[in-house]
Length: 332
Image (cartoon, rainbow, N blue to C red; front, side):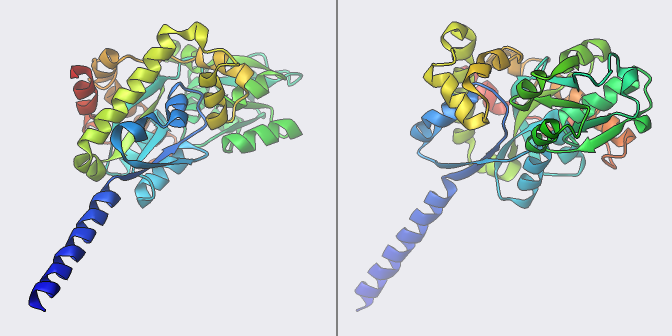
């Protein structure tokens, strides 16, 4: 009887240990509607096949939503722009940036409605601009107005998520929006680009980017998984850089990007071309995870604080940037 009981205890322990291992090999990744090559890898389930992890992808409407989900613990990894990342770090969230998803460049733009009479930033006085608050486009909206010496209080800046912006534009409720694809492609059909994030970065030296962040506790326990994630991201970006001509509207890769982002397949190639996707070497360099990203986050946080969006600016944002997995992926 004792042997039987002992065997049952051992068996139960083995089951519990097995469940613990299984549970540790599950991850929820939050993503947004950005049009990036990584969407193809999501669709092909490349990462699941390499790691054996059960991966759940959760689509959220804004970077601010992603940061809230990370704070609540409902996701472990998430995509967000540099503004919401800076906001999250400034509020003490235990996360770190480990991959630059894209240099936004001209992939975010301020578009004004045809017939609005807006020709310059100064013409935006009393106009209604919709942006997702605490986003990269929000940061660049405020920065563009400030740089053009336009009083932000004279402009009606409305907080809307991308789907809400698309609906408001269709109804004629807004005069302008600073947004990214797929909504950007839609509003361009009946509007004109006034300025892009690339233009603002060149004028002010304050670039914006989209990145992938991870909960630090999860990162410590899942080192190999993160290395494989980075390798998958790098391989997909490299395939796009080397074979852009093959990423056509009728290709499986572009169809996958359209499926996950909500964009029209016909618009995806042009949308991808607006971004810059740093290589593994560039990721680890001083331009990005080796120092530049931390400086960009600090500048973004300082601006957000000046606008009352956050209360605190950290003395050093490099504590929220980690190039470990980029270096490991590059070494293999």
